[in-house]
Amino acid sequence: MSEHATAERRAVERIVLGAFRQLTGREAGALRYAIMDDTPVGILGLSAGAAGLNHVDFVKDEDAFVERLLAEFGDRPVMRSTALDRARRELERYFKGRDLAFDLEVDLSALSAFDRKVLEVTARIPAGKVATYAQVAAKAGNPRASRAAGNALHKNPVAIIVPCHRVLRSDGSLGGYGGGLPVKEWLLRHEGAIATSLL
Image 1: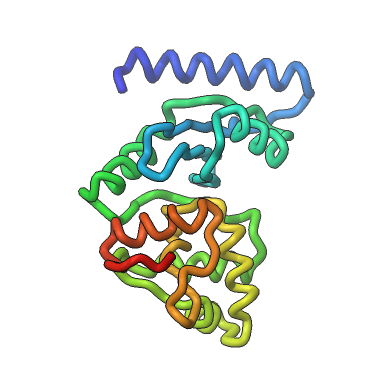
Image 2: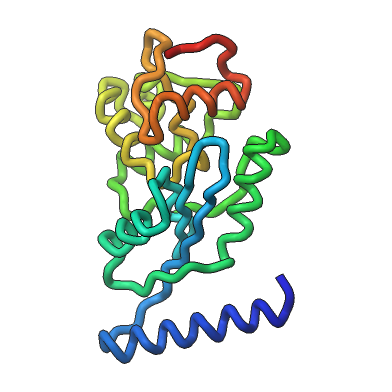
């Protein structure tokens, strides 16, 4: 991004934050978002705050994603931003098969301690490999909590980046996935984890 574009983005952000402060009487950091509408798995909505990426969601369209963000972060100004270009570039490289790993800060602070632990364990599953819900639960410290681990994975706010698609049922079937089972299977094939259809 050019210096001029960066300065322009910062000026727009100052205006938005100032307007938010005047309207609400509160100081709040902006929640920035971007839309990727040309991925092989559909439209993705990305958002980030000061602590890092807090959403990579499968969405119907931009309006639906913004509504979701306003429902969750209504106490903060929400603005479309090029500040998420790095995350977009890493996802684009991933979808092109150039790099299946991510180096992005994620913010899981809204989750419970157990849910965060499950996602931290899941984040360490390398591309091309899979684990079961029971294995993830055990590594998260509760071997008998495979259902709770599944619920934590269902709440994963940063799909693909935290690769909950790499977690399967103990019988090797796909289990569930917020983006839909065809997307989960596509991601696993793309990473070389499966060769034959599991649907």
